[in-house]
Each structure stands twice: as structure tokens, then as C-alpha cells.
Length: 331
Image 1: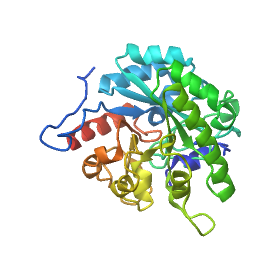
Image 2: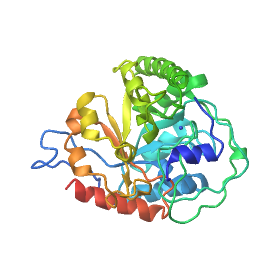
Image 3: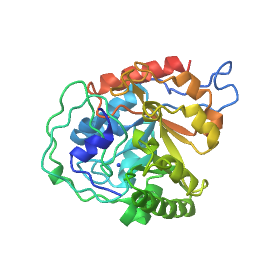
Image 4: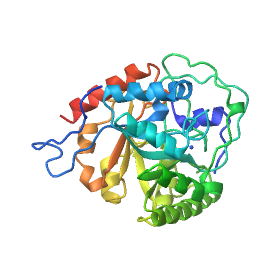
């Protein structure tokens, strides 16, 4: 299984998760009445390189053509070793916009060094709530998570995270992952989401929750975490960042989900998955029907999207393939 939730669990996560501007406006097709969207990237895709050389890696990301950035957790602490203001300056100086950040639901408890495989993974980039390990592809070097710097989490530090998001000029703060195995866990997470959503709205930014496939599994023989979270939170305070691959893996039709909760999906993860529904791959090399999904962008309320292939095995080569294929899909 190639998901972030297992990756984060296996690494000790314990929680309550140089080209022209690539905007695309298809006046004769999908986006005849929609605004243009620059192509964004979730930096968990380049987890290793971003820990080794954040500035150099971002320079390569910008050279591919990406214009929007969503950040994730880092072994360097903070925002890849920078403050929010410093990271904003770095990203802006490369001609990109820092749009969103993934924060964990609760504290991260590291174990000794682990060697996760680095193929295509699951969800996006924070170590709370146990992610699934990327599978397939080359092996990454061992990463010593026992030396992970202290990380803020929404349960304990939601106001500080909101304040930092504002300092960084972000549009959204996103919960990357949260425990959803029991009704009690879900209820506690809902409380955190409501508080964070209220604080975010007061600060003038948005708050969203990022899903994995697990959110679509019934809990205690009843409703799914996805249903409970959306039905028991304020739709104006708690939005969704729909991960298209994990929804597809769970057997859900993203377009149908948009129709059930129109306007509640301002953020998407553009992630692809092989027919085996296990292996995350480059955009366009899997089974996700991106053209059909993008045709429903207005219903979803889409504002920003981010290409993600967790710990992509080929690094910049992988994100270049995804960028090129996505441009074709949206042509």
C-alpha cells in the first residue's frame, strides 16, 4: 500500500497527518466560464530534496513551471527551516505563490530512524495521524525521525498556526491528517476543526481538511468519518481539500461528492493512482479521470490545486512528467 497514512504511522506518527506561467484558460472547453488556474505542487512530493536543500529544490520546482506551492512538514522544523515570513520571501522570489500549509491534528511522537520506500505515496505532508508509506520505485535513505524538531499541531497550537499562516500570506491552513478510527476520535477532531475554522475566518484565511481513503470507511458499523466531519462542521468554516486519488481508491466519484456539497472543495490534490488502487504514480499515468473532474471545478468551488506524488521516486523528473501530462489534460 502506498499511502502517507501508513508512512506516518510507521515513522512514529501519533495524532488526533524557467518555463512560462502555466495558467490555463480553455475558452472553448473545460473552463469557458471559469478563471485560469496556475499549476501548484504539494511539497511532500519532494520530501527528501526539500529536507536536504529547500532553496535549490524550489528553484528546480519553479524551473519546471509550477507557480503555486503547498508546504508540508520538514525534518528541519518550521517551514523547511525558515520562519513563515522567510519562506514566503523565498517562494515569492522564485516567482511562485505560497498558498497553503499542511498542519498536523495532534503531536508527533517519533520513533528511531526508519527507511520508508519512496515510490508514490498517499496524502500530503504532515506526520500526524499516521500516513501510509509510499510504495514502488527506488528506496530513499533512512530518515531519523527521532531527531524531528518539535512541531506545532492544531489540537494544541491552532491559533499560533493560524497566525503564522497569516504572516506567510497564505490563503488556507489545511489539516493534513487526523485520527478517524473511532467515533470518539472523530468527535475530538471535529472540535479541533471548528475552533481552527473560527480562528482562520477571523484572521481572514480559510481552513480545510485533507482526506485519505480511510475517511470513507464506516466507523462502528455506521456512517463514515467523511460524512460525520462534513455534516457536523460549519460549511463556511471547514472546507475540504479533496485528494482525488484517495477518493478514487475508496470507490468514490469526486464529481458526485462535489454535487453533494457544492462549493465546499476549494482545494484539490491532483494525485494519480494505478489500476491496482495501491500505487501512486505521476499525473496522467494512472486511472484518475482528471478531465471529467476538472469539468466540475465550478460545482466544487475550486480555487487552488496541487500536484502530489508522495515522496516521488524520481524527484524532479516525476514532477516534470506530472506537469507535462496535466497541461495536456487541461489543453
